[in-house]
Structures are given as C-alpha cells and as structure tokens.
Amino acid sequence: MGKFIAALVVLALLVAGYFAAVLNWNYSTGERAGWVQKFSKKGWLCKTWEGEIAMVTMPGAAPEKFLFTVWDDPVAEQINKVMGKRVSLHYDEKVGLPTTCFGETRHYVTGVTVVEDIPLAPGIVVPVR
Image (cartoon, rainbow, N blue to C red; front, side, top):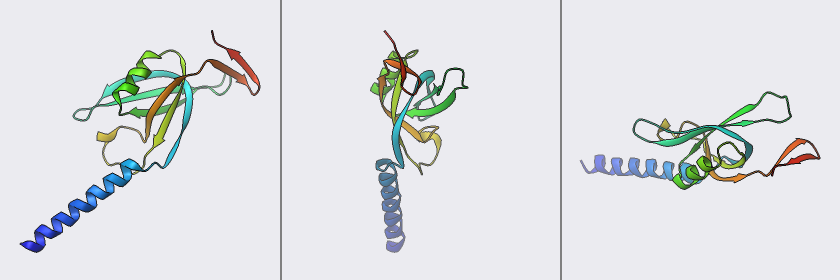
C-alpha cells in the first residue's frame, strides 16, 4: 500500500511540474495589429475570453484572421473599450496545454495598445485623428 501511495505522489508531482512548466514557458511572444472584430466570453465550465482580429497587410488585400484567447479580465476590459479601433495585441504562444479549459487557441493576449496611424505601404502612413 505504501508503494502505491508513493507512486501516486510521484505522479501528482510530475503532473504539477508539467503544468508549472507549460504555464510559465512561452513557445513564442509577439505583437499582432488589426481590428478586433469578434470578442466574447465562452466556455461551459472554464470561461475564457476568445477573440479574432482582422489584419490587413495592404489596402484591397484580403484580411488575415488572428484568433486569440484572453485569461486576464482587465485586459479583456481594455479590448472591449477599443473595439472598432486599430489595435496592437501583445501575445504569448503556449504549447502543450491540454483541453480547451485553458482557451481555444494557443495565443494568449497579455496587453493591448491603440495604433494611432495606419500604414498604407512601406514608408506611407496615414495618421488617424
């Protein structure tokens, strides 16, 4: 019986170590700029903020969608306040989180800033007032 309990303790420590490593380590980190076009709190048991921004590289080009997850309610509140404006989202990409309880994407937004000008082409910028 003692060996069984010891094996369970070791297994629990391994699982806890795995989650600690995955939650504190980023595969990548970066910025994405665009217009937030969808943002909502979703989930049956584990509620996370899930969103989508449209990124346009050049006028007339088809927008690329970037799907993201937000864990932090203050960051979600900031995103809700700037809906309809061009924003830059800072994100961390995490790999290895099991289930959608941690979010539906691998990209977890940790900050948002409003982008004041719109680049039309390299070196050509239209200021927004």
